[in-house]
Length: 82
Image (cartoon, rainbow, N blue to C red; front, top):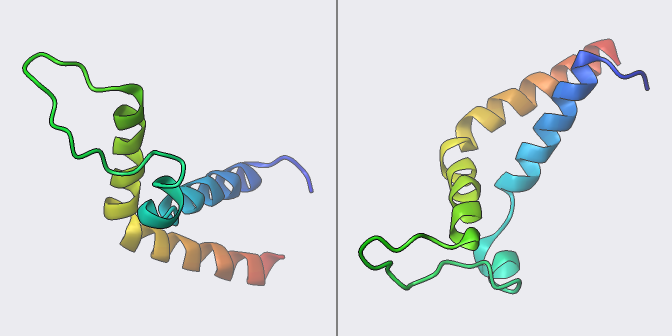
């Protein structure tokens, strides 16, 4: 497979899909990356885990419907052009 723009976009799509399917209770909580119930105090910086979990949660909530459309387009393109 040649390194093309399409293959780069397909790899990015696969990474976003992998982030979107992470299940918080089954996978992330076992790695101690689940929802932290503690509330931060005044001027308390959030930890690295909470900073990394915010984009993961955002991808799972915001990108759900667009990912279905983009995946459908990618499948049709792959079927048509190989």
